Length: 230
Image (tube, rainbow, N blue to C red; front, side, top):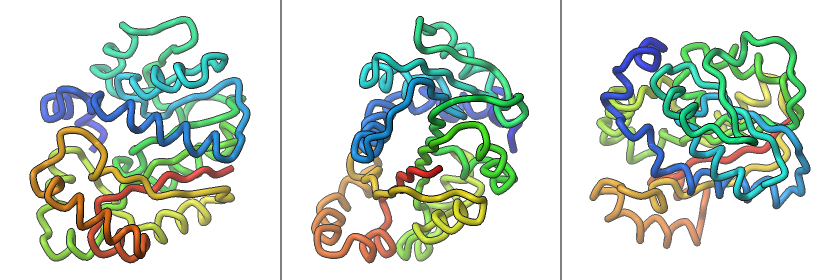
C-alpha cells in the first residue's frame, strides 16, 4: 500500500495533500501541548506531507526547530521548496533512521495508513520523549450502518485501519506508551470543504456532543482523537 504514496497515485487522488486542513490540525496540536505545559526545543513530524502543519506550528512556537520526514517524493518536493531556517525536511522512512534526540514527535493522521501500524508505533517510542498522535475515529454506528464512508476512506485516502477511542488508546498502551492526555477534535465539524452530509450533521453532532461526548462520537462519528503520550 505504501506504493500509492511513493508513486503519483495519492497525489492524483488528493492533489492538495490536505494542505487546507493544516492550520486547523496545527491548532489542535498546539492546544494539547499548551494545556499540558510541554516545553520542547526540537520537534519532528513523521509523515509530514507537504509540511504545512509544521509551518503553522513554527508560527505558534517560533523558538523551536522543526523537521519533517516524508516517504512520498511528490509531497517531499513540495515541502522542500518551502524549507525555511527553522523548518527543514527529509525524504525517507523515519523509523529506519538512527537514534534521535527530539523532544517531540508529531504523528498526525498517519497510523491508519501504515500496513504494520503496531511495529511503526513501537519503532517511534525511543525516538523522542513526547508524542502527539492525531487519530481519526472512523468506526461509529452510522459509518458501519452505511458502510460506504469507510470504503471511500480506503479508496480515496488510503485508510487501512479503523479506530474508535478505546481501541486507539489501547493500541498506544499495548505499544508501551503512557498516555498523558487525550481529547476529541471535531474534524468533520470544523475542517473546511466538508461533504454536504457532514455539513448537515454539524448541528446534531454539536447538540448531542454537549450532552454526552463519548456516546455522540461512538454513534454519530465525525470526530478524531488527539493524544499526548510518552
